[in-house]
Structure formats: C-alpha cells, structure tokens
Length: 182
Length: 359
Image 1 (cartoon, helix red, strand yellow):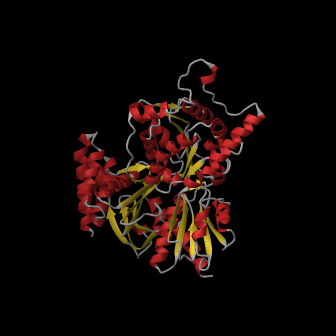
Image 2: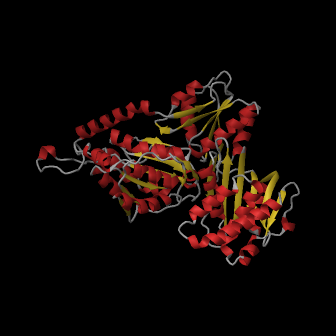
C-alpha cells in the first residue's frame, strides 16, 4: 500500500509545514517508509509552492510521482496546475474559501471541501489554515492515526507552547470536517 | 536506534560531524545550502569550525589547509560551484590530502538550473580537475545511504590520503526521509585519528629538516613527479575491492535498467511494477560510480536480455558510456533521459521498458 500526496498552494499558506508534519508523524509513530519532497523554484511570497509526501509499506521509488492518489489544493492556480495529476478515483481536498468548486472539471474524483481560510480567520489566526487542512486530510483518510499527527504537531511547536491551544482547536476542527465527509 | 526524519543535505552534514569532521568551509548555492547552514549551527556545539568563505575557491583551499593539518575536513557545493573548486580538489589529490566533498548536483552546463539533475557524471568520475587524478566517487540513492556513505567517506579518505566525492543529486539533497544515524565519534577517537596522521600531516614538528612535513601539490623534479604519479596510479588500481553495486533481479531479466542516485530508486520501483505485472525487468545500480562496477554487467543473461536501459537525468547521456563498456556489445544499450531540472518520471521509465519488451 502506497499513498502519494501532493500539497499545493501560495507561499505563506504553510503548505510545506503541512507536508512535513504528516511525514514526521509517519516517521515517528509507524514503521512505514515515508518521503517528503519540497518543490520550489526561485519563489517569492505570493508565488506557488508545493510538496510531495509518499507513505508506503514498501520501498519508495520516486519521492514525487506524476500520478497522485490524493491532492490538497489551497488556492486556485494550484487546482489548474495539479488537478490533471490526480488519478481517477483519487481524492481532491480543496480550500473552498478561495477555490471554486465549479472549477473542478472532473467527475471521476472524490471531492472534500473545507473553507480553511475563513475558518482560520474565525479562530482568530489566519496562519492555522494549514493545520485545519491537515486535520481534514487525516480525518478523512486516516493514513496515519490522528493522535500521532497531533503528537508531532505538539512536539514541533514545543518551543511556542502558547500556540498549542489554538493549533489543537484548529486540528480538531479539521478532523471533524474530514470525518463528516467520509 | 530511533529513526529521525531528515533532509538529505542535513543528514550528510550530521553524518560528517559524527564521523569526526571538525572543519567545514563552503559558499552558498542552491540546492545544497542546508549543508553549510547545518554545519554553521552544529560545528560550535562540537568544538569544530565552520567558515563561510568569500568564494568556492577560498573555501576549498581552506579545507586543503585544515586537512593538511590532520583535521577531518569537508566542503560542499552544487554543480557550477563544484567546477570552481576543481583547482583545489586537484591540489588535494596531488598533495595526497584526505578530504571529503559533496556535489548536490543541479542542472547544467553553465549556471544551468537550480533544480535537480545528474549532468555532472563525467566531471565527477573522469576529471574533477586537471592532471588525471582519480577519486572514490560515492552515489547515494536514499537519504540513509547518503548518511552511511558520508560516514564511510572519511575513513576511505584517510586510508588512501585522497579526496572522496559524494555525488548526490538535488532530489537526494532536498528530500526528507527517515534515517538511523551512525554513532558519534568521541573526542578521544577524533584525537587518535589526527595523531595517526603525524607522519605526514602538519600537526606540529621539530625544526629539523628530516622530520618536517611536506605538503606538495606537485614536484619540480620530473623523476619525483613521475614517481608520485606511479604511486597514485597504484592506489587507483587497488580500488577494485571497493566497488559497490546493487544488483536487483538481474539473472532472468529481459530488460536491465542501469541507473544511479535518484534515477536508480525510480528505476527500482519500475522493476517492482514490472515484476508484479509478470514482466522480467532487473536493475544494476552503481553505488561507487568510480570505480565503476563493470563486472556487474557480466551477470546479465544475454541469451534472454533484449537491452540494457540507461536511465539518467542528463542529456546527453553520460552514464551510458560506462554502461556500454560493461555490456561490451552483448546487447543493445537504450536510454531514457531527462534534463534541465526535470525529474525522471516513473511512467517514462515504464514506457521505455515496455518499448524494449514489445520489440
């Protein structure tokens, strides 16, 4: 069993961090193989950024495939760039605050919607949109147990404990949204 | 030993620290900046020295000096930066100075592209500077292997009194993967390594002429120069024992993929996909790209093998020349190539394998 995930969005949306949290959780708490591969050129803030996470029971060949099992898009440009890489029957996660569902011009993929930009603003910090989306992804796929992912986030944010309650709430909000759409 | 998720560049730097590397000098270039960045943070913790040189040339010559003083030393760069270091590398080879350097290679020639590529194969394996010197060149295809080979590289360098090159591509350098790190050499072990070099290194000598250290990147005396080159040639000839290669499902293969570094791990996943579909593919992966594992190609069953498929992120093909020398005309050598910072796709390799099998 191998899961290929691509996470794509604007620079500054925490796309890399989302991927790294997931890869770290898989490394720390499972005996699966995992790779994280960041892809960026000479990007600036506002440019696009994307990363690839592969989680597998077997050996991992390419750390970035050309066919994705799962795709998380945090902004419109990423949808037009990456939707074609999603395999038939794959799962598309969209930030429905700024990605228009009508632009998803495929009916052979599963769609999971989460208005993470709005939700993050409602929670009082726009930066946690990636943690909400990570919750959505883990809640929907359970590729790694949610508890393990939270332990990783908690560990990584260890130096900034005052951010923990907000991130915990954000992650749980995402889990709830993801589970509801299973 | 617990595994940790590490970026290739950082893992290489940590492996070097654990092997006893206590001097690093480098100059920034993508995609290897995490190596100097990591050393900058880590060296002060272990009593080592990190220097960001004013250029690649300065950095490699600082390593030349530090290694000549008996300290395990390292530098790193990426393709165009490695080219700038070639003078210093050649001097280290001429003076028989043990040092380790890493090329996290990117697109080329020229300033090329900042994305991963394997365009430096000839430079790495045939001529990393003037004068026809040779080095062990180690090509990891996973982050774990990058760690293990870097750790071993310092032992090889000291054993041979010769530079060792870690040839990794930008994918191996920038990807994160779980690794188990090797043990940290103690201060006593590191001091003993340095002391063992006292016969030749500038570790502090009396002023009497006979016992002084001479670090000489050349000889004015033509007879001595020839003798030095003969000694070096004898060393290079002894490396047959150091050849490392992975042979995967080669015996009955109808197509054998030949690849190193990131292309090899992609090739191996293609072999698995083929085997699952009943297609007989195999893989030969040089781990030492110099000395090259020519003998591995004698293990192919040429009565069933339709072709060897050279897979590399270089246009024109470079590895293919060594593959042809191994195959010796016993079957065709086809190529599957990409370049310019584009990363080899599994589907492209699959298509190339199918094209050979369908012939």
